Amino acid sequence: MSILVLADLHEGQLAGATAHVIAAAQQIGGDIDVLVAGEGVQAAADAAAKLDGVSKVRVADNAVYAHQLAEPMGALLVELADGYTHVLASASTTGKNVLPRLAALKDVSQLSDVIAVDSADTFKRPIYAGNAIATVKSDDALKVITIRSTGFDAVGEGSSAPIEAVDAVVENSQSSFVKEELAASDRPELGGAKVVISGGRGMGNGENFKLLDGIADKLGAAIGASRAAVDAGFVPNDMQVGQTGKIVAPELYIAVGISGAIQHLAGMKDSKVIVAINKDDEAPIFQVADYGLVGDLFEILPELESKL
Image (cartoon, rainbow, N blue to C red):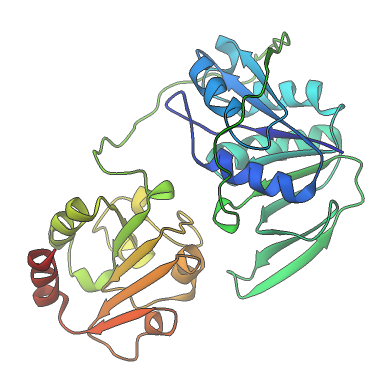
């Protein structure tokens, strides 16, 4: 068996999710190649070559792949996929955008949000907002799979895999990059942060989210939010944690004023340690929390910050 992993890039650098996908590939077994596609991505390729378990890094460095649009990326993967039994990517924006196109062009099924590997053709994935786990088997010659990175511990570094250039340059007349608007922040990216503190409807309004800033700064944490807080207009939707937002699994997750609707729990229940702060001692969030503090968040947060 041979596996091709599509590397996740963040601002031209290798994203942490790639190491989690390689861990999933190791459980499948076989040679693991990593495809780094973009423009000016040599640094990302060098980083990928250091990851344990990588047999080879293939680099497609061309302007047509600059923003990893689905159309050129899909065409590139079609050209490369015939030599592999599996093509994997993280269940990120890029993976969810590109891999369905590859599956359609190759006329195979796609397995999405895989959280566990039973064998080379059998996998587990959550359904019903994480309330049930489906075991699915693929008989396709090519398995196209997106990996939920929170389900696998990242591989370490210490390897020195060879790097080779991919000469394939595809044509793309179907789509063009227009612009992107990036939220500037000195804090860690929400999906990869080791500590996350999130606010819910209990925060009352958007101004009160500033109460989380001091704690986040002291803990080096990213700030998230529940869908209720986003829908209420307290914060922008790129902060949303949950089934329809970001899936996170930090070492520490602090939920403030969040009742714990099942859609939110689906996005953070794999966190290593969960702390809940809520005035309602019957809130569902306490059923998954390792530590719970019942009280008024407007009194607790300033005290917590002062203790830190």
